[in-house]
Structure formats: structure tokens, C-alpha cells
Image (cartoon, rainbow, N blue to C red; front, top):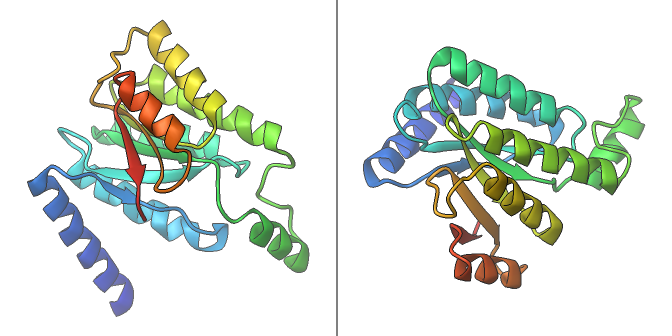
Length: 195
């Protein structure tokens, strides 16, 4: 459709400007019923702009039961396509809406049943990205102190430098300042995320 082509052209222009100016482009995640085209365009943009360095990041909501596998599949596609994967990891933002829609439409909820399962997938996704640091740029976008600590421990175990270009930590502006500022003071790439 014309509207979708316009979206793609605007995204291409934004990523081109990001590449020219050394600015990363973070593509946010949405509800499951509109996420597939977002994932497709994110992968297409990464295949174009992430050849030498990471410009484009897709967002993986780890409260979804399928996202850890999707992250791994995205990595396989990136390796086959000879481009770098940009992965922004979040827990997720639409839990109630997703569960209500699943009940109303009679399908299994795509959201983990409990926080423990979400935490497990989040930390596994972080570890996977760090294990594949040469091909995946990771943005740990979490307000969970334990997840940040686990990421740091994994970095230390893999001898990944605190200032490694492919590893960043971020929290939303106005939230969890103690995590952001303490990580920055300790020498990690840290930032506030302002949607």
C-alpha cells in the first residue's frame, strides 16, 4: 500500500540520517497484533544500515513467550545476511491489554504467566547477546537491578570491557536514576531513555 511505502521511505530516511550523524535508531516494540510488520522493517533496515556498525536496534519484549527464540532467529538471519544485530531488551509494556485480548478472542496469551518466567527469559536473552557480542549490539533497557548485576557479572566472566561499544545500559528518563548513575560512575555505557 501507499501508506506502508511511505512509512518505509520515512524510516529509511531516518536511518540514513542516523548513520551519517553517528546516532543509533531504536525501533520500539508494540502489541503482538501489530508487531510482525515492525519486526520485518527493523530486520530490513538492519540488513542495509548495520553492515559495519550498528545503527538500527529492534526492541525485544521478553515478557512474550516467543521473544527469546525470536532473538536467536534474528541473530541467525543477521549472520546469514552478513550484518550486525541491534537488540534493545525490555520486559514489556502491554501485559494487561495482551491478556485481555487473548481472553476476548479465545487464544493463548502470548505473555509469560509470571514475573519469574519473564525474568528468566530476560536474563537469558542478555546472556545470549553478550555471548555473541561480536555480532550483537546490546542495549539492556531495564529497571531491574538484579538483571543489571547479572549482565555485569556476565561481562566480567567474558572479559568484555565496561566501555565496550556494543554494550549499553539504559533506563527511562525519571525512573531508576540510581541504576543509571551508579553504572555510569562505575564506567559502564549508561544513558537515560527518552521516548
